[in-house]
Length: 241
Image 1 (cartoon, rainbow, N blue to C red):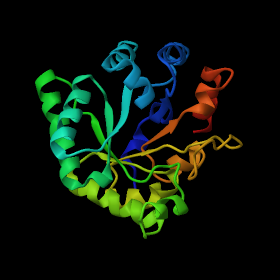
Image 2 (image 1 turned 180 degrees about the vertical axis):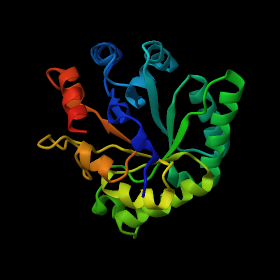
Image 3 (image 1 turned 135 degrees about the vertical axis):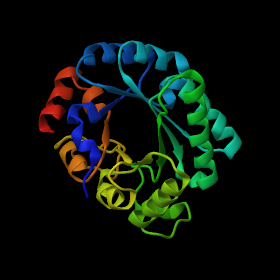
């Protein structure tokens, strides 16, 4: 299926994961300025610094993927999404296992904040199954479906909820693109350049494979942030694409 994100330059679809402290985050941002477009702020960085880290990265010209994985009753998640959108985040996440009502509430919160504060509505993404999990780990949670089937079931719920798309492994991206259509965000962590250490990721692919499979954006962390020269590592990935 045609992927409408293919019209965007590939380097603008690479999200650099800042899973570090604020000093290192700013150092990496400075090295990657005018190269990368997106930075991911996860729990480690956000819980230590709050919305200020989003403001600072936005001031440097980056788009911010605020990956806090909301999972609570709909009322709480609506408020969380409202606050995240208020901060200026361009992309935010929630767990799809929270259900359709919870995801719909997140969408309402994001839209309300965008209207009130004059921001664009951020992309709202549902986490399907964490890319660190394999079939055995999923089965231990009580899920009897195969990994690929569970991801599809959760993605279909995200579509029903009216959110922008999902987060899934690059191995599931092709099937999800068929289900969700050309305009859905399909953001894939678990991306490793050929020959890189997998780290704690189980379901991985190279950057090129992820895009070929239909990903709208890829998330790359340690292969860039722990490289001797992060800017050169980013450029090498961009060149591959």
